[in-house]
Amino acid sequence: MPPLASLGRRLLARIIDGLLIGIPVGLVAGGLIGGFGYGFGDDDDMGQSTGVQLAILLVYFVYEGLMLSRSGQTVGKMLMKIRVAMVANGSVPAGNPGWTRAAVYSLPQLVPCIGFVFWLVNVLFCTWDKPFRQCLHDKAAKTVVVSTR
Image (tube, rainbow, N blue to C red; front, side):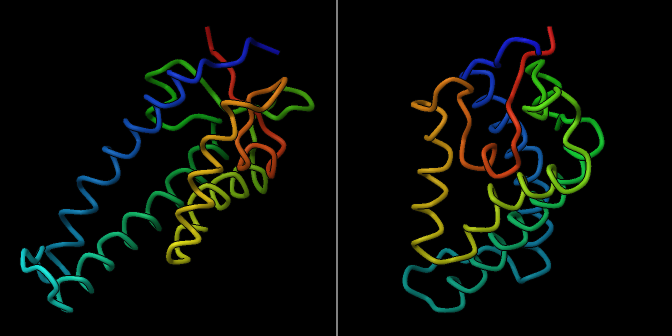
C-alpha cells in the first residue's frame, strides 16, 4: 500500500473539486432557476439559493461517485497526486464502495442543520483517526486516501 496522503493534499483536492463543480453548476442552475437574489429576507431568494445549492450537491455526488468508481481519483485528486484505495487491497473503489463514499460525503447535507453538523464531523474525523486518517465516508466505504507518488 502506498503511503497515506497528507491532510493538506486532501483538503486542496476537495477545494479544487468544489470549485470545478460549484462554479459552472452554480452559474447554470442560478440562470435556470431565475438568478441569484440579493434581497435580504425575501422568500423567493431563499428558495433560489436552496435550489442552486441542491443542484451543486447532487452534481458533486454524481461526479465523485463516477470518478472514484472509474479510477479512484477526481480531478482534484489527480492534480494533488492522491487517490482513493480500498483498505483491504489498495484497489480502485469500483462500484458500491465508490458510490457509498460519495453518498456519505454528500447526501447528509440534504438534511437541514443536522446534515451540516454531520458533514463537519465527517470531514474533521481524519484529523484524529488512527492509523489510516479516515473520514467517516472512508470508514463507510472501507477506503483510505493514499499518495500516488
